[in-house]
Image (cartoon, rainbow, N blue to C red; front, side, top):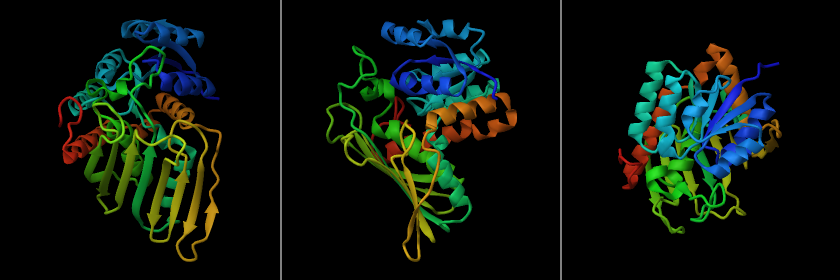
Length: 342
């Protein structure tokens, strides 16, 4: 049985409350402490048995906290990560790395200097369905991969909040650094790397502000190409009603196609099929429908915290490359990326 790890959480919004905290408990670890300036957030954390602090210093002073999940608004990632690395804590930071490329570069430099164990929370790498896809691709079941197509969308209106009375920071360019492209596209970009074992190296994009009345993009279409020539197409959106089909991942090869439906997101489940390229026959691919990507991510991070050899799967430099692609995508779309429009 894995040794229990004491966790802290910085920023106790809906993802931390509804997905990360339950995953920590389900993995057999402990949520020791939470840092959040909001009284409502701190009260919610205390109901879960965590000690609540109004500032980061209080959490850092907790000796039982070994690993910290950073889930603040994007523009606060850098300050939290730098302080935690200096304190010798392991850090799992929500994506995107930061609200700006400059902050992400500074964070990666801090990780290099400090030698701290750092990972970006690309939880989609840990979905059992996506792991099954990667295994089938590596086995050659669909031949040479020619294209990946991703639709990852939701409805995010101006009034959405994590807790009653709070502002929706995801639509504030100063806090979020961008809109749907900044929030949702990093998952797809990272999944291409995870599934194929190689990153996107060329990227272009178009954004839209079509349906929502706020200052950031509410949709984007990105196209990219890996070094070996596989093409990637990502459609991300804040303007797709949640009742519509809006989460689909297709990997097309010279011998077949893998299709995952409703696997992208925070929850467990979804479906995966393999369609062979000669007769067009389709078969269902089984995977664990109960293990959420958050649970598997906590387990993987915990193993790597105890086993240094397992840390190779967590790479700040790789994640910085993803941030650079996001900045280039915004530049190609003629829209500012973060506070520096890099």
